Length: 472
Image (cartoon, rainbow, N blue to C red):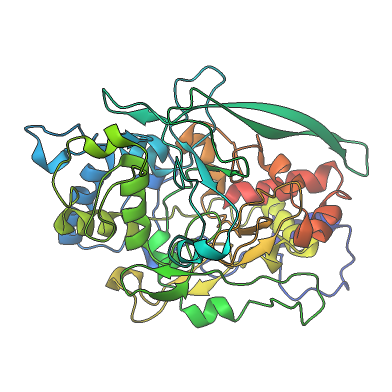
């Protein structure tokens, strides 16, 4: 076991710093409780099922509620009418027949393989430019739907109904070099659509590729006080540091009011209840009392005439069980927090400026929606704010107040278990990054300065930074 002096020496060597170099944090050892990413809710698992565990502080009775929600999250829905009335009503248009198909073992989705029949865990969001007579759409949905296909392409359908399209991806590449000459090839996806089922798309259609994000810790993110999130916002960059994170303001359908956006790649959803209802409607074609009706558009006559599983197809009791489940998917504990290389990488993470957006810690509210979520010191490594990430990552599709260049800072907790849980390491909103280093190098816009500092790192420093990120 390395001594504390040896750990500090290695840290200074990797950083290239002298002992008198001022640091606001002590990087020679882990902070108290740093391994507990979710406070007392932290899960002590790091295997392939690490993301599928209930929060560690649930009671036995609450674990039963979690298990019920889990069953509805995992098991397939069927076409109506069916003898299984609690699970019928799938479609008519849909992207998958079970939530778990997108969120692989409650983890991260991935882009489709070259010859896949459907995209499954990647969605294609659609919209068209706003006009004076379409402001009501923007107020309610955040975007103006494409007239024939709506706000999301569904590439699967029940028998007798045409899927909306087949999704294919190609890619183009370019390389970036570190100061020591090490080159990294970056891949940019290109969307190709064929077999359009309902005529041509609007000529000004905007597209956004979105892979399914991990499900862990969502209830804890929901429990962060709004004031704590807004305290990190600096929309006008008043401090001149080049970072101007700002909140997205979105529509809360239940209260019919404007609320802080927290969930989704552009923070387009205000809470988990609405996020879940939206996924049921658009991903599976299932209605709820929160979002009634159908995902069929006005010119999809066969879709509109298809059988339903009743209204709502997902009743309030079932929706509440799924909400409990999604709120209490636990966050795994960090690994190797006192490893010298991990500590060195943590220092580099801060030195590069990554923590300016990937905010390490918050404390959840005492009046959180569920007792197990309250008063927890959590380490999500996200400020939940929007940041301009530059032209390279831009989808050019606005969503409520988020511009076509802005994305919500992704939480980093659980990052190092992506391969183990989901079977791949593809990252960013469209899965373009094949590993962590590629994901870092796609950062631009407000993150340009941080990325440029990383590009000065040598072999040892790169390894340390990745060791830290993989410990999360």
